[in-house]
Image 1 (cartoon, helix red, strand yellow):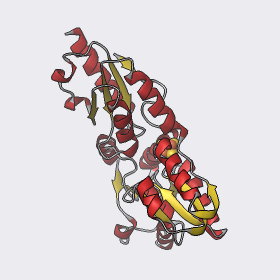
Image 2 (image 1 turned 45 degrees about the vertical axis):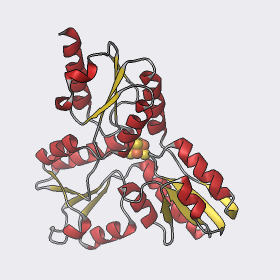
Image 3 (image 1 turned 30 degrees about the vertical axis):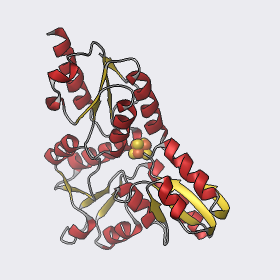
Image 4 (image 1 turned 180 degrees about the vertical axis):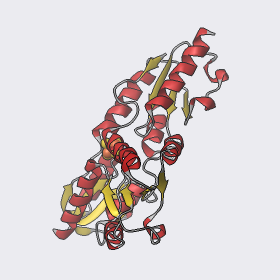
Length: 280
Ligand code: SF4
């Protein structure tokens, strides 16, 4: 069994947000609130809950006492959430990943310079929605086909959800360049995500089966599954309890990787489980 060591598990943005939440939970006298799921990983969110960290959206925060810690999740939030939390007198702690924050700021600045901001990402994803909320007229597109249907604009600026596919984003840029007179690209596909995908693809070519550990609603975990699936049989689990011995009957070498919001303990449990069946 081989583990993708460098880019499996928490990325720097998630590590930072996790640290902010858990440290605040230790020092606060009462509960600590998160503006939404800090990360897309159910076991990790359950652990935070046990530590006294609760999820409450800004619209559910009305009754909270001034001074209550309110942490913005790693995916970021729109400006109205910052404004409302301040108006309620909450202790605002910004857990937005610095890379995501920088994309938000770029989108806002480019719109101020007259560009139509086009974000390539998932319309329902909190990061994409929060980034576009920092603009007045920005739009989210999910595919090259949607890019081709956009009207012509004098100036277009593209940004991307940080966990997007680099290849698909390149195609979107190619199309949008032709749909305006002035084009600028300010997207930032997170290095961590890209490297994790490259490493997973390299590993998937060397093994008979892959296990991807991570949240079922985690975008970057799903990308890892997609990348590996074309190269070998791939199994996506949130926890080691979901692993099935029958999946590995024909496999002598199994690779393991994990999404950016997967705890080390979940990766270790999957590795231990695989070690155990290979010894049996
Ligand atoms: S994957 Fe990259 S952009 Fe997303 S939270 Fe992690 S470090 Fe930030």
